[in-house]
Image (cartoon, rainbow, N blue to C red; front, side, top):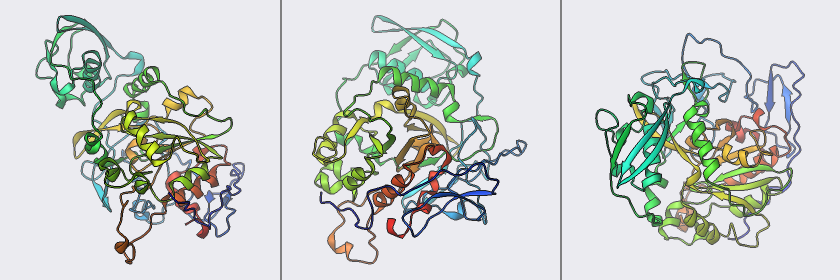
Length: 467
């Protein structure tokens, strides 16, 4: 790929300053400026603020949720999502959330080819962690006896996955006899195990044929990669539902991943660097032609990819996280020239879908499952990183469910290989997301605490020279 850095962009970060929190000004503003020196300043301006609001909502008697700021086709904020004259933009800070709005609260909007729906929790009450019940079960299969430990807050999905790991019998082939009344099929995955009425010390039988543990052809990944239905985890007022990050089941899932999936280090993290987590599929590359092999890998890369990585590398250690499998991921990154080349940047490590897990919410009133990317996986292994110095870039908001405050969503890249004739028309707009994103990441690189920022407002910090 040619060096396509925009000549108007400087590789060095602009000077930024932390806001003076000792002042009593009504608002803090991170302003866009024609000058390359854009600073975070205290201001009484009515302009929307990039800094998070500290306003506390106390009206618990009127359960509702605030409309989230969602991305347009170009990744910009839609102002009508927050109401006329609103300047309060907040990220989740409470462990409990309430879902209530017009209809069932799942109405979405089409923006380009993307649908975003406000996440609505499952309508059930969790058992507190301190009082959570556990089941020690015995399973008979193929003449062998297995022990399985399950908690009341675990999903039936988790129970089935335990069986899958022990026996290699996939959930769709599992027939469970003697555990509970009624059929326990995959349609019950979103139920909590504690709601099944299973007796303690129960012994049950599994019938099912295991699958061979072979690597799937990359073409089989197409359905997962093309699933672009998105849900947003916006700001919710206090209520009766538990946020994904506070769900005891989700905490256990993260701990399990930390314990069983070691990080394979490609290049050791450097002291004092912040953590930049980058999604691969449709964020860094157009995955459709890459999977199909219809275009050379370098033509599938998002415009400015290598320049972007070189630009941010002095300030961030870089991690690439894909929902594909490791063997495919490694080979494609090598073909793209992201690893194994002579570039002036290095990738610290990569993670595949083995470090992701599913959470459950409601979609059109029905249980909806989607996978998430928990940043705690990296933080547990490298305590120098935390929410204060980590940022996660992705084209799907749903991947931020466990860490919504650290996520920055950009427009998906799906236009690799656009023909030359179309590029000459007025409808064609070159993709410049990585140029803009690089400017933002360099601009905030000198800040001590990213938790003070609202990354949904990132484009408002850009000046004319950044776009």
